[in-house]
Image (cartoon, rainbow, N blue to C red; front, side):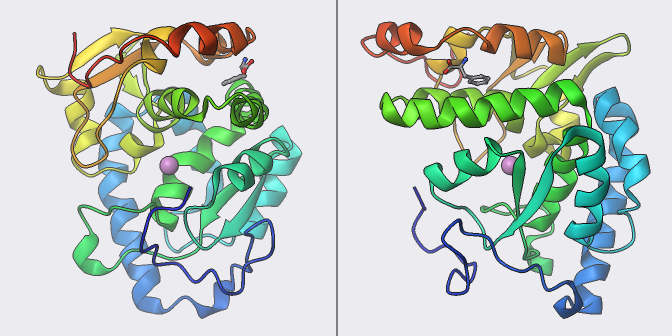
Amino acid sequence: MNKPQLRGDYSRAALDYSVEQDWAAYTSEEHALYRRLFERQSKLVPRYACPEWIAAIAGLDAALQIPDFDQVSKKLKARTGWQIVAVPGLIPDDAFFTHLANRRFPVTVWLRKPEEFDYIVEPDVFHDFFGHVPLLFDPVYADHLYEYGKGGLKAMRLDAVKMLARLYWYTIEFGLMKTDSGIRAYGAGLLSSGGELAYCVDNSRPHRLAFAVERIMRTEYRIDRYQDSYFVIDSFDQLMRETAPDFTPIYARLRGLAPFAADAA
Ligand code: PHE
Ligand code: CO
C-alpha cells in the first residue's frame, strides 16, 4: 500500500489512479533537469545496460524533454500491446497489478527537484520512464511483466504479495543479466541511477547470485542504499520460463521458512 507522505497530487486521480499527464504544464526548467538526468545516464548505459534496453531507447526520441506519454504509447502499442498510463506516484497494489495485467504501465507524472539529482526516495517520471519503459518494447520482457501483473492479483488472494514483491525488486527493479559482453543491468532502479549503475556491475562488494525464484522470494531487501545482493539472469527467456510455474505451492512452502538477510551469501 501507499507509504506515508506521498508527494503526488492524488485528488484528481480516477478510480484506477490514472491522471492526465498535462504535458504542456511542464516548465522549461523541468525539461532541462530531465535532459541533464538523461545525459548523465547516457554516458553510462552503453557500458552497463542490457542490449534490449539499448536497442529500444534509440527509437524513443526521449533525450531532450520529458516525453509525451500518449506519443510513446502509440509506438509501444504497435510493438508489444503495452501502453503508458500517467499516475500521481506510487499506487496501491491492486491498482498496480490490474494495470500490468492489462498491459498498462503506470508512469509517475512529476519530476524530482534539482536537489534530488543524485538520489530520490519515490519513483519520479525519470525513473519510471527511463528505467522501465524501454524494456516494454522487448516482446519477452513485455509478456513477462503482463504475467507478473496477473500473478500479483493472484498473490493478493493468497496473501503472498510480500514474496512476490521481492521477486519484482530483484528482477524488474534491480536485476542483472549475463551477456556476451559481461554482466549488464536490466533493472529500472539500476538503469536510472547515477551511482548504482556502475556499482552493480563493477564493484566487488555486492553478491551476484544466480537467479533462483525461491531464493529471491526469501531474500529481504533495503530500499535506502545500494543493494547488497543482485540476482543474475541468463536472458529474458529464462526469466519468463522460471516464473511460469504456479507459485501457489511455492508460497505455501516458503511461508514457514526464515528469510535470508539482504547481504546473505
Ligand atoms: N507464475 C506465477 C504464479 O503462478 C505468476 C508470475 C508470472 C509471477 C511471472 C511473476 C512473474 O503466481
Ligand atoms: Co521502478
